[in-house]
Length: 119
Image (cartoon, rainbow, N blue to C red; front, side, top):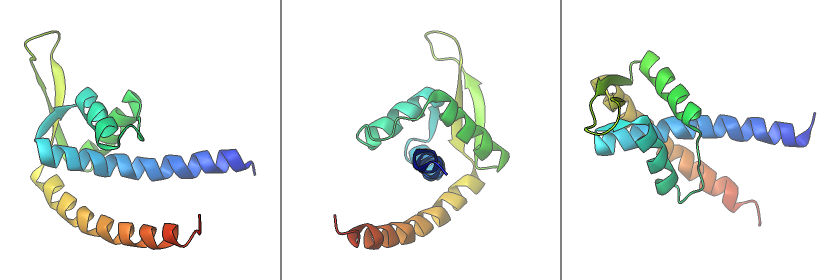
């Protein structure tokens, strides 16, 4: 198997989960956001390291909506066409609280593993 292909697949899978966590974090912090603003905030929060495409954001939001984590609605912006906004549901807020605890455990393990790489 091609090494670069494997790396792209593994990184894509890691980022997919990270994007969902980032979206949940941002919606828990800011309340209601539209997709483009979520994308910009992910770039800002990650210091530019993460640069998701618009389709990646909307695919994540669609999946999260199917799981009952977010709900969406259309609203006028006062400039330009209406935008679709997203917010965490009550269920999504409960899941975010549980997910944060899991992420803390993951971070602890990742620090241990990365610290042992010797580079």
